[in-house]
Image (cartoon, rainbow, N blue to C red; front, side):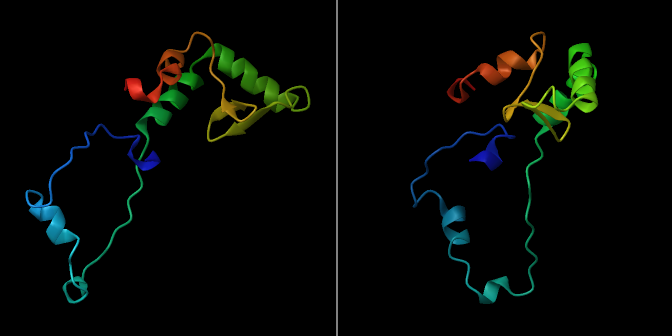
Length: 110
């Protein structure tokens, strides 16, 4: 399920007799696969890119980041990961961030 979080989608049930394409794909024989290429795709989470970009422009974030870099002992509960500040392994956001409301919504609201 985590791979699907970056996409807008709807899951719909289709009975097997009306879902012929999926049924046929699930029964591909080994002989039919010869000479085909398989690709592994990884979703790109645009949300995290936008969050990092917004945080880079935030003065509170910049001050905290500088404090963590200058005195890691004083900020021992904070860690840096992929451009984000984590407080006790959770993403830290300034109170003025527009992302706070989005992240605080339960997943089933979306």
